[in-house]
Length: 88
Image 1: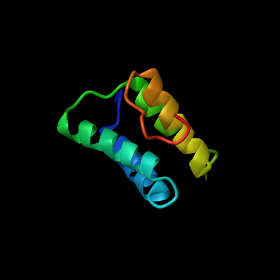
Image 2 (image 1 turned 135 degrees about the vertical axis):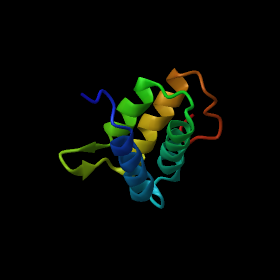
Image 3 (image 1 turned 180 degrees about the horizontal axis):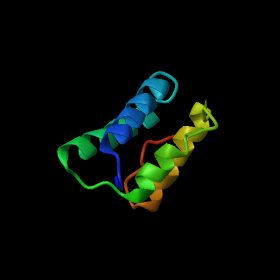
Image 4 (image 1 turned 90 degrees about the vertical axis):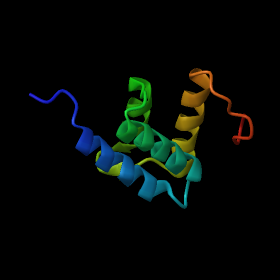
């Protein structure tokens, strides 16, 4: 039994990066950061994976501005610096 499928997670994070590369660089860069931490054995929080997973529902990607807002709110909730991000 597999509790966590790293390969599927890596593929999904790659899809997020590709989907939002031009339309929402903040989301793409955040997914890339999570991908790098995942592949290098760094710490990843369940909240991070949950927010990124929520960007695609019913085979539809969330609008770029809403996706970026989710990432901003997550980073703020985690106590990370959001200075320079739109709306903060």
